Each structure stands twice: as structure tokens, then as C-alpha cells.
Image (cartoon, rainbow, N blue to C red; front, side, top):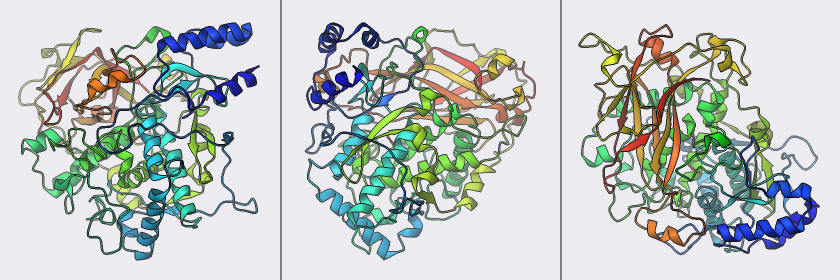
Length: 620
Ligand code: C2O
């Protein structure tokens, strides 16, 4: 029976682009009710959230994502010409282990003219493929544009490729972020290699976290005009001319401060802040949840400004890695250029993958996921905890589709993605520079100028409209000790292995807004210009606009009601156990003051406040 329904579904693919509004969904529901047996019908009833894996494909329904500039007016993908196939780990022809592709730092490989020549040739060929070919550069861009801008719908069990639900799909802002981008790159790299007949071809990685090499953090030369080897397929005009070499990527970057002329750090200061940002976004994030992001289960609509927690929905929750990766996007795109209000290309998820730099940036993000698993604990009280991915089936059995080098649509699961060595690639060792942020020690805490009393600051009003204002906002947070209950489902034995987190709950952020919040503990003096290399700094949140700024009206032609879709809700997690001990707080009952410094939105937006429902202590 299920197979029959599935076949019916396949015959629908390609249809319904830009349709599929609630009415159509209801008609389909009625159809399903009358056509299918009672057992099957259960799957069509209004979906209540259960811990079911996200099933994602580019089949069928595709919502038009409005695109401001350039020819392609949608980012829907071509339908597969053959039946989708299941992922298999790569092997070499005789069935043995695959040829290993070694991904090397771009600041190293760009010195090899032969590599640059091949790399450029691969992209030139990819760009020359026709639009009907899913391997074409335009379609590679569309993969990102569509899965990252809610063009498709989540699907239901049973797999593979169950029926579409009524809920849009978004692979950012949750635990799908790292696995999905890993497999996206995996196929992108295989297609490039195939186009030049080189099975060892590997993407380079933009090693922007490297503060040891003077050029590693610069926009990689091999993507820039005037490179001595022909690189015409690698350039892109939509990059920030103010961030060209010798500028290095600043992970504390804020477009608004820059526009105000207040971001005048020396390279040395930038490097220290970069180490501290990496330390707080990667090293202190010891739990899968804090590093990879929060759960994303079928039925969760994280494009909406309401979250039905009772039904098991969770707001979007980006992991530490995703958040720091957003900064590189923002810094590379055309921010603060009034002619380009959408920060394209890299600074907006709609356009980001039009820039070949995107793939080398994500190669580093992917590398850092592997590095994260090897970092010794050093942040919990026990000090002996391993960093491991989620192990639940709703994570492992999440399912995506990509087109491979043979133009086949392949169904992959997160389970397939977790071990990069099984995928036939590895990263060159850059542990010397990794160790600089892994072993980073922030500056000693400030001495308070007056006697310190957290109760001078207001507590949040639970479920109230608490404001993250244009000026820094400080709140008192009452703490508690972890209990056995906090260990539940975490695979840990001792309370001392838990990391203490502080979570800002249900932060409301407009889809089209750039937002950045830096958080400090017990330092209410913190302001937009406070340095990030100090003990009181505990991390960053960055939200990139994922929608159009000046074309929001055109969203209304989309087939899903956007009335409450102009905002997303986020939980924002800061991992603070180590910082508290650094600040001399070793017990569980000392209250703290949490200061949220909103760095403001970019110049072209109005200055706005953000609202959130609560600040909570949490143990992971
Ligand atoms: Cu899907 Cu770097 O973004």
C-alpha cells in the first residue's frame, strides 16, 4: 500500500511548484482519506510532533524563493530522471577502501599552479553544464538556496521519501546543519572531480580559524581577481571590497560598528578575539546540542513565530559551529553597501552558494566538526567527557537527498555522514593552529569597581516580553545545582560531567534581519566595543538574513501563508561552566548577571529591539 502511494507521489513530482497552499493540502488530505486504508490514514492526520527524523528531498512541492538579482527566479531543483537510489559508502573499483581525497588549506594549495588550474577547470566545466543538469553550478547553488530558504516540505515516514507534510523544511538552525552541509560538499566535490576526471580531487579549506599563519584568515587569493593563474571560474563580484587582503577575517566582526567607524582593531587584537570566539563557540560547547545545534524533528516549523511546545516543537537552535560560521558569511558578502541591501552573495543564504568561496568556507566548517570530536574535555568539572554526536534515531535516521556525479538522486541519512573517513576524504593536519584556540586562556576577570550584588539587576519576567535593547541589557539569573534528572538521556554517568549552559529562550528575530548578540557574565559594563578576549565573555549569536530585505512584499506570492512567518524563534545557548569557575564562582547558588550586548543590525536596517521569553540555566 505504501509503495502504491509512493508511486503516486513520484508521478506528482515537478507539479505543484509554487502551489500547495493549505487548501490544496486539505484536498490532498481528503483524497488520501478516501483512497487509503485506515491504517495508512493515521499518517495523514494533523501532525503532532514526535521524535521522528526529518525526511528531506527536493521532490514535488517547491516554493518559489524570491531572488532579487540575476536570471534564475527560483531555486527549485530539476526532477530526477531515474528512481532515487540509496547512499553507499564509496569504495574503489575492486570494492576496497576508496581513494582518499585530502582537503588541504587553501592558503597552501593556492601556491600550486597545477591545483589552481584543475580547480578552475572543474568549476568552469560545472558552470558550462546546462540548466537541466543537476550537477550544473546553478543547480549546485539552488541546492543551498532551496534547502536553506524553505522551498521544500518535510516528509513523513515511512521512508524512503515519504509523503510531504504541510510543514516547510529548513536545514539551518538545528542539528541538521553540519550533516546536511557535509553531504552537500561531499557530492559537490565528487562532481567537480568527475568533471576533470580526477578521483583524488579534493576541495580546499579556508582555514580562517588559523591565527598562526599570516595569510590563512585572509580572503583566499586564488578566488580573487588578478591571481597569476587563470581563475576566472572562481571569482565573484559580490564580495566586500573593504575586506580584501591584507584584512583578516574577524570573528567578532560587526557590520554596524564598522559602518560607524568604531571597529578599529589591530590585527593582533583581531587574532586574540578570534581565538576567544573559537574557544567559546567550539571548545566550551562539549555537548552535541551546544555544538551541533538543537533537535529538529518532523512537524517543527522553525519558520514560524509561534512554537507549540506542548506538541513537542522546539524553536530553532543553532549550534556553536553554525553561529561562528555565520560571521564568515557576513564578512565576505557585500554588507553595508546600499546598492546591495541583501548582503549578497555570501552574506545571505539565498545567494551564498553562488560564490565559489562558499564551498571552501564550508570545507573548514566541516573540518572543525571532526576536530571538535578530538578536543579533550577541559571544560566540565569531571574533565573526562568525550565529545560525541547525538545517538538518537530521530537524528541518525534523518534523511536528505542530493544529486551525485552521475545525476542520480541519492538518499542519504545523517548516520551515513558521521565518519568523514568512511566518506573517502580527510583533512590535512593543521593542529598547531587549532591548538591555539583549543588551549586558549582568556584574560583574567575584571575587578568590580563597586561591591558586587547581582540583585541590583532585574530578573526576567518569564514568558514576558523581555527586551534585548539597542543598549546592553542585563538580567539577574538565579542558579541551581544539577540533579539526576539533568543526566537523563545524555549518556553520562556523573553530574560533574554536565556542562552548565545559559539559554535565552524564544528570541524573536525577523527573517530578514541581521542580528548579533554577545553575552557577558557579571560584567554589566560591557558594551558594543568591549573586547571579546576576556573572562566575562561567553559567546556569540549571529543570525544572517535568510530572506529578502527590500522584496519582502513579493514573498506574499509564495504558497504558504507568511503572515506569522516574518519572524523566527530561536533558543540561544551559551556554555558557561568554565567561565563561572574562572570568575571565582564555584558553587551552585550564587546568582549571576547576564549581559546581552546587541551589536545592532546592519546600517541599512532600522535599529530594532529584540524580544525573548526567558533566560534559563540548563545542563547538557
Ligand atoms: Cu547553509 Cu554557510 O550555509
